[in-house]
Image 1 (cartoon, rainbow, N blue to C red):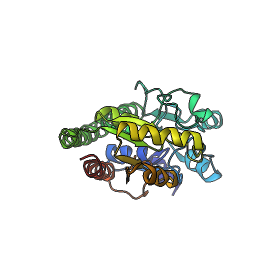
Image 2 (cartoon, rainbow, N blue to C red):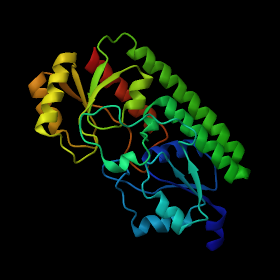
Image 3 (cartoon, rainbow, N blue to C red):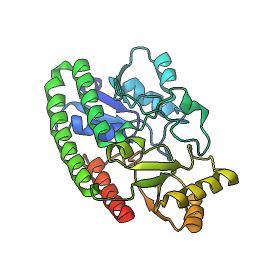
Image 4 (cartoon, one colour):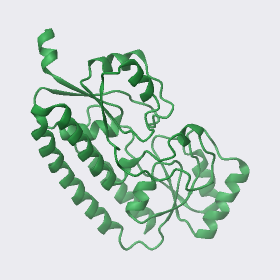
Length: 285
């Protein structure tokens, strides 16, 4: 009945990482519904176009949780169409890493609009900051549930803090910290765990490096003695295998947690990071 839907507080999240943060913040609380808006195949929302179903979902939302930092290129359109929609921005007040830290590969022009890299959640410290941000903004918009949001956020961030410690300990003794990645998802992660991203091959999906760029990268990898190339499950890794063949470096998969199943459990991010830790230990030892 119409009455019941009104009692539910509906939180729509822009994409998977925001969904996982939010189901942890609302864990075990009644009368709250969390709906994930998009399931982009490639994870990044830069080129995502809203479909009519998305807009219907947003019309039901009490609050829309976004990553911010330029990740949701459609946000201006949403604000224009739904000026009253309350927006919670996970990256509010977080200093973004500059996106132009390497000149290998071509820049996608849209990424430069905001000049910062939006993949904040890929570092555990970034995820913690985002969870706290979301919880405190939800608490403002939904005062009667404020205490629950803040308590849950505290419990979840405590788990994330011990995950961060475990990962630091697990990566401590590694000598060769040079890595090559194929997309701009890992600068926060690399900074947190003192890894050096020697090169980023494709700044955006769909831009294959030119032959000249490719040979520059191959030379750089040989010069630095990079042993590991990290691809992401969301993207094709054709170029990686070409480079691996030429350099003897091996190809591994690191997951930035951009995509996942809508029915995921609250531990999904933690499991993914634990798996990334194992992969890094294999690759770099």
